[in-house]
Length: 119
Image 1 (tube, rainbow, N blue to C red):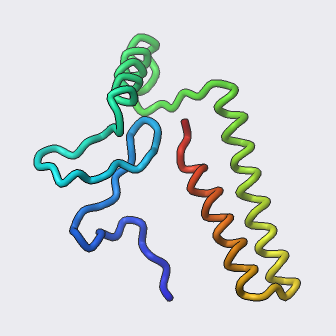
Image 2 (image 1 turned 45 degrees about the vertical axis):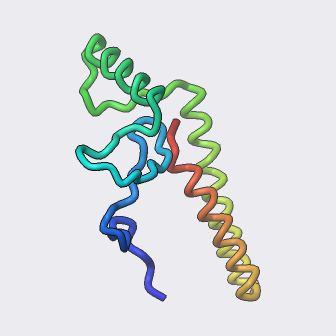
């Protein structure tokens, strides 16, 4: 079965959208007009505050600023992803059955999905 292209359109003709602040999936409400950028008013407000802070500091507009804690959390989640992928490779080399490999691959997907959310 070929891998699905993440940019492929859904059958309804709409693409999955993610919040520009937290990365959560935004449900398509069948609304007309401009598509939503943020999942909640809180995320919209945080983005507004960040834009103001970026303008005051003179950083480039596309700069990504993470706290030391956020960087450490990101590194931990990247490590989890690498370990999960290595486990799948080791299991395949050791002759694991298809069901076990499916479960391990699902774990890799779960870790990667969580990793998509930076904040």
